[in-house]
Every structure is written in structure tokens, then in C-alpha cells.
Amino acid sequence: MIIKHVILHVLDKNSGNLIASQDELDLNQPSLHEYIEKLIEKFKNSDYKTGQLTDNDDISSKISDSNNQSFATKATVLAEELFDIIAPSETIPAGDLLVIEFSEGVDDFFSILKLNFTPRYTHAVEYQDEKLVNNLVLNQAVLPAATQKVDEGIIINLMSGIYMLIEKKYLIDGHRTNYFSENFLKIHPENSTKDNIQAIKQAVKSVASKFDMPEHEVLAETQNTIFDTVQDDGEIKTSVIAESVFKGNVSAQQAYQQIMDTKQLESDINVPNTERIEKKYRLQRFKLDSGIEISIPMDIYQDKSKVEFINKPDGTMSLIIKDIESIINKFNS
Image 1 (tube, rainbow, N blue to C red):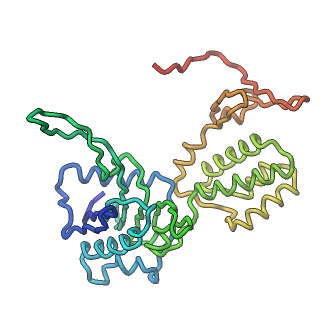
Image 2 (image 1 turned 135 degrees about the horizontal axis):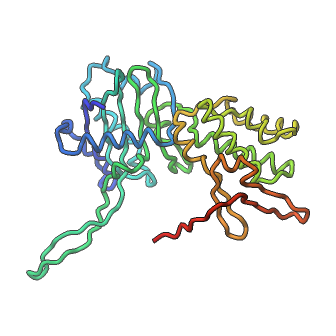
Image 3 (image 1 turned 90 degrees about the vertical axis):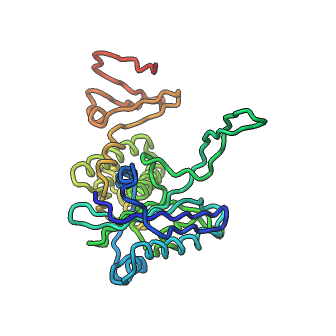
């Protein structure tokens, strides 16, 4: 990564002021490059939304070089607009706005990251009655660590217009709103992978309830199918989920598809961050009514010679784990 420009503006809602920097950060500042690079890396490994900017989008004109504005001027205009939106809201947290222009390979990127403040205690050395006293002080304006996920932000590929977006909903005028995309950037991103999977889970649970199917079985098979299709094709295939989860039950498949149509989910949903989904879904996790919790690797779960759920005539179930050669106690020291 080559960092070209960086500027930091303080969105100090508590005092009611935008403290706009009049110059860019010194790129030779120790650890600055490392901090920004880790923030961007963490951003890319998060559950972000995607979309495509057009020349008609308001944000496109504001970050374009064709408007003959300096990087600092562009960033200040963006900070002023964002501050005007968040200042009246009691729910949106204060923070710093970090605006970055960088390049990777042949592509240039423009990034707007809102780093929400996190209250943290620190020490303060003071003198009281001529005695040195170490006190605890609550600092209300600590920035997130480089290893923490950014709550709100966008990274725009200046060459293609494709963007990655992370945001949170906040209560504004009585409604939970994605203010960062809707009010600030004025764009309409696609649903995140997390949102799409949540919609699929709700549809599967609804159909399972209607057709009296065990919820744990249909959800396990849903996870299994998502894992397989993402691993094989980099996509979630909703039609394959219907065939696998409701195998042989045409009515259930049709009911599921009707819900998918209502939710306007595509039959093939692209997953931009496949490694994250594969890592997250490689274990099947179950919690039994007895309080027992168990995690089963996906390849083991798929092998009935290793693990098997058995439905008993009295309505209870048994979980059989087979061919155990050794057991290691995972007692935490």
C-alpha cells in the first residue's frame, strides 16, 4: 500500500464543534503507515456491503479530481457535511474522521473512515498538597486500536467506482437509519453477506415451522450448503439451499422460493469475502437442552460414520459420536 494523502478531522459533538484540520498528516510520522494499513486490512476482512458508483452519484463529484479541489479541501467539505448530519442526533457517537487516499497495485482508492470514540481509563500524575498522586482519568476520546473493526466507513476504488461500505443503524427521528449511506453518502449499497444470510435463515425457519421440520436439522443443512457453495463457487446459491434443505418436499421448496422472491434476493448471491465465511461456517455448533454445547468440523458433520443424530420414537433425539480413538481435555490453565 502506498499512502498518498491523509487528513484527520475531529467531529466533537460534545462541544458542538467540528475541529477541521487545515493541513494533511505528516506521512513520516512514526507508526502512522502501519496504523492505517491495519485499519484498511481489518476493514477488508469485515462484513462489508458493496456497490458501484456512477458519475451521477453526489459522492463521485466530491472526490473527483475534475473539480480541481485539493485533497484537504475535499476532505473538509465531507467532514462539514457529516458533522451537520450527526450533530443534532443524540444516538450517533462522536469521533474522528480519517480521510485517506492510497494506491494498491495499479488502483487508486479514496477512503472515508469514521473512528468512533471509545471511553478508556488512563493514568494521570498529579500533585495534591505537595504529594505526588497517581489518579485514574476517564478519557472520552480514545480512537479504536488498529486491530479493531471500523464501525462506519467506505473505501472507493477510484478506477472502477466499486466500493466497500461498513455502517451501523442509529435511531434518527424515531427510525433506525443507515445514515452513513442514506444521508451522508446518498448511495444505495447492496445487502451485506450477513444481511443476506440472515434473510435466508429466517426463510428456512419459517418454512420448517410450517411443515413441522426440526429446526436444528434444517439450519445445520442450510449452513452446510452455504459453506459448500461459497467454497466451490464464491456464491450463495439460494436454489441449491431449497433443494438441499427441503429435499423431496416440493411444497416446502416453493414456499421457501416465495419468501426469497418477496425479499428480492438473487438466486446467486456473490460473496466478496469468501475466506471470512468459510472460516466462520467451518464448524457446526449445537447447544442441547441439557446445557451441553458441541462444535463439529464441517467435514466430520457430513460423515455419518463419525457423527449421527437419531430421532427416537418418544420424540427425543440422540447424538452419537463414533470411532473415538482418544480424548484430550481442553482445560484452560
